[in-house]
Structures are given as structure tokens and as C-alpha cells.
Length: 392
Image (cartoon, rainbow, N blue to C red; front, side, top):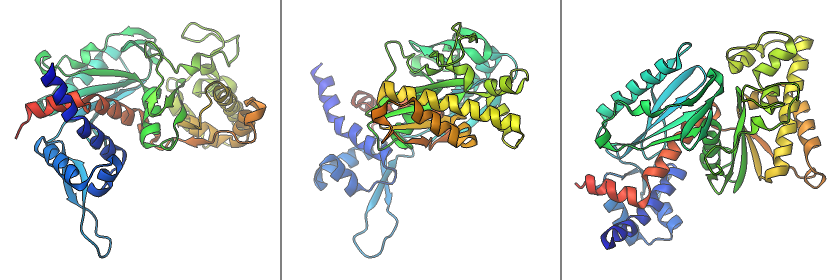
């Protein structure tokens, strides 16, 4: 026990330094040391130890006139890797990332048909990456466009499925590898990405809203999502902000979901519900007829009104819009803004939280999945275990 505690303390500063490198790409050795309140000697010893453990490396900083040359810190080219998988309504993507947190998409697949077949294909792709990087892969993080509770996909509305078993995703990885699998909701992970490295980076409290098939989101406080007792918080689309006459696929009436996406547009236009609400919305962007413009105004107003209500609930410093939410606001900006302000309590109207487009765009869930995985594998205990396995 004493040895374990000693090892944890030894790697505490290493975990902090990796946090700085992830938050500030291209940070210099001197700036990182200053951020941690370390002297040059202590920083040199720490960085040398991390280089020996294949965690960090250094490269010359870009020249900026005269002065003493310095170096920038980055991920070691033999360091830990994480996999981020994104399971969406009609396709999936798989990305590989190092400690710098930049996802590199290595596989993708459309699945208009069977979900179980899609999961099998994704599992095969994960297995292929594992075989190529067996000594370096440290975690698999999965973003899903559905409700997650206790790390299970309990509702996948777009496919009409419940209690989907995601354990199949690691079927091609040997159990002895002990690779952790982390499962999160796509909107929650997108909000995490915006709070850490995106449009809400400067805020201590941020509300993220994401529209795809319905609307989800998350409140992020000091860089951590408020996920609830079972990880299922942020299902904002199932608050009864909508029409009580409409029954949601979730089983409830009047869900906000049904008034803020492509399904709502189709209903206003008197056509059948689209198979892919986001693609349907994009297809309407070029239309300028009165009926389509009126539908956009109605949907944008519903989005703005709900956003204002959630500001009253959560008191965030900033609101970010991801997925198709930014698109909807852009199509009817005046209606969104008016509905947003009308929904705010009087004391908020003079200085409402700004509403910003998400910086990561559609890649938000993938970036968030990487962040979550790296949080898991860069704790002091995890770094100590990595170093023990990879001593030079």
C-alpha cells in the first residue's frame, strides 16, 4: 500500500503537466513550468522522467526573432493511445488519438440496415486497431446518439431500440488486455469538448445544446459534465416544452424533441417524417418559399425559448449550440433571439448569457470521447502503471 501511494504521488505532477499540454497545444517548457509553479530544475527532472516513460517529448519552438531558443512539449510518438468511437443514427466513425487529444479518423461506415451488423463491423475495426497498437492502446471511449445510463445504451430512439448491449464492441480485444470501455451520450461529450477546448473554454459554467434527432445537452461546471446519478442527465429534449398532443418515441407527451429538429420541419411542411432529420434540414437550406421560411421560424423560436428556460434553470455563463442547433438559429436568427430573451427572467434580460456556435461542430462528440478517455488514462495511478510497463 505504501509503495502504491508513493508511486501515485510521484506521478501527480506528471498528470498535471499532461493536463497543461492538452489544454495548451504547443506550450513551451518554460510556460508549462510557470503554469505549474515549478522551477527550471524541477521541470527538467519531470520532463526527463516523462520522456523516459514515453509520455512526452520536446521539439524546437518556432523561431520568433532573437532570443534564447526554447522547446514546445507534445505527445511522445510511442506514447499511450486511445480509441474514440462515435455511433450515430445512420453511421459510425472510429478515431485514434494520442496524448495531444487530436482525433485521427481511421475507419467509418454507413449502416442503413441492421444495428447489430453495424456494431459487429465497428467491433472488427476496433480489433484491427488493437492488433496494430496492442502495446499502446489504453482505453476505448464510445459516443452514442442515445440515452446512456450506468454505461449502458438504454434507449436508441433513432433505431427504435432499447437496452442495446455494447459489450460486443470489445469482442476482438483479448480480456487479458484489460482495456477499459467508457460509454457516453453524444451531446454530453460534445459539451465536454466545448468546455475544455472549444467555444466555452473560458467559462466555469457552460450549457451545451445539440440538435440531431431531437435535442440533448449538458451543463459543464469547471470542466466536468453534470451527468446525474446514473449518467443520464441532460436529456433536455424530453422536458415538456413542446405540444402536449404529440407523443414522443420515448413514451412521454409534449417533449421538446419533437419541436426542434427535422421532424418538426417536416410536420410544419406537411410531409412524412424524415429518416435522417439532420440531412433533411440541410436539404431545406436552399429553399426560400414562404412555407419553408415560416417552418424555420417556428422551429428556431422553439429552440430559443427552450434555451432561455434552461438558462433560468442552470445560470450558465455561456450557451453553446452544436449539431443542427447552430444551423437552425442561423436560418431564423431574429426569431431565435426574440424567443430566447422572452423566456428569460427579468433580471437576466439586460445581460443574458451569450449564445455561441460550437467550435468543434459535428466533431464535438468525437473530441469529447477522446477527452474522456484521456482523463481516464492520465490519472497518477494510470501513468504509474504505464511507466511500469514501458520502462526504457
